[in-house]
Length: 620
Image 1 (cartoon, rainbow, N blue to C red):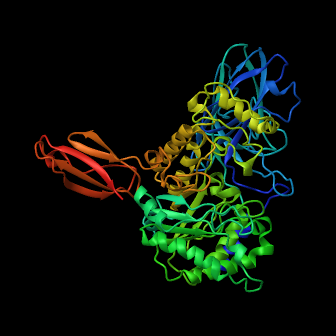
Image 2 (image 1 turned 180 degrees about the vertical axis):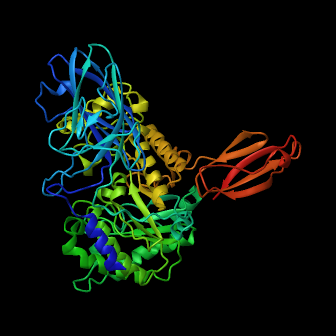
Image 3 (image 1 turned 135 degrees about the vertical axis):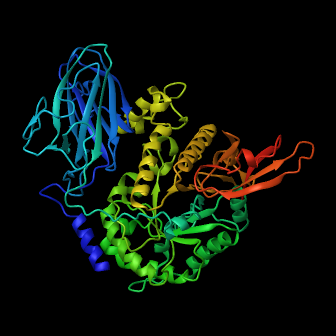
């Protein structure tokens, strides 16, 4: 079985010609005024989620006439994507449709193909907007440099009409539109990712009651025990955890903890790479106290930079670490889960990790056949990489982990390890700020940072890069991917560094937690009491505002027709109680665990006591 799956992975990694194939996660449209008077202003995303920037690689006098826009897309359906702008002069604007630009380690551009269809415009007119008029491969009103086959008619079915086009970065489709000074322009299309021709699709799991789905209910509301066992013991920045803190975590409402561990710092020489008893003693202390206080546990491998920089050179040590960890914890209850590698990056890209996950699963399943295992995509567990993840159909106890720290310049403001890009502080959430904020000089040298601050200072909250607009589209994609493939998704890290303004931190945590729970995504915030702080160790209590942001009381709702409903986090256990006037002794009516973020209590008009009072509370 393993050999057969390795063959599949090899096929996925193949390339065609000089450009390696890769599934697109974004669609791209470029605009450029062709006359010097056609300055483009007030550029904004008008549909979908993504980003808009000036074409900073052009000459300085051309950049004000340009925009480059990318939107998040997937291959499960058409996404309506749009851009709007205000031209200061009359003339022609070039419209260029393509796929995203990304290069491999050899600086060769990936072939990430995107379907485009159903163009619409206001303030100007698009020629042949749904690409229905064509002769062979020639699309009327548009040009396409090169000799690529761009016209197609499915599958999948078109968004409009009978035809659509398939494009990628090096083979765009180009036209021009006429604009009038002072007249706002809006252009939109339907876009979706094209499945690479050589990619064998991961097998979908139709059931929603797999072992992984059952295990996921233990990992809905978690917290990371950061800055302790993942720290290099020679660097001196680790912070300890006391036994009493686990009872506090459970009392606050957390149902699990995630324990980052730098196992690689504690291995003996090869070939055995024996782990020291010291690291097992420290890890056991955290695992045992968490489990004994009713908390499920995820333990991972963290900061294994030697491996992510050069996987082949360190794969033996990686495998031997997990063989020892798996055997050590083989007798533990199923509420303990393994996570192979935190934030694969650099040479440990998603395609590479697909192969190593198979190898590690074979090792771990020998001693832990029923243990929940978390695996995640490359690019720091990036949600946009999910479509490149490949999981074996023979293992139904895998939970997929992703991370999301957007909006990054806000959540990491003042963090030394991400400077200079995040050196600007006093950024508020959500944007825009009361007064414009300029990035500090060392950050302003980065064109991406300058562009982000321009949008942060000017765009309304609903489209501001420092608002829920930054992450909701990605979370929607994670939910869609999970539903399509039948694999539970867990957001293993998100959070905001303590240097951010306090009220803004609280608003961010509240909105992120709400967005996750509305999409039925389990989560583990970063962190308990290290640099991001749910808990204040000086006062031995939660940071002000955090309990309300992360664990608000359930809300009882009148659903009409005598029905009551409630909202809360998936996996929480709620009790509905009633009391009669004059007596006011609360009696339970129904106790239920939520299977979604909203539910009806099942108490209809016939089951309600006349003039009784009702309340709902959740049980920790």
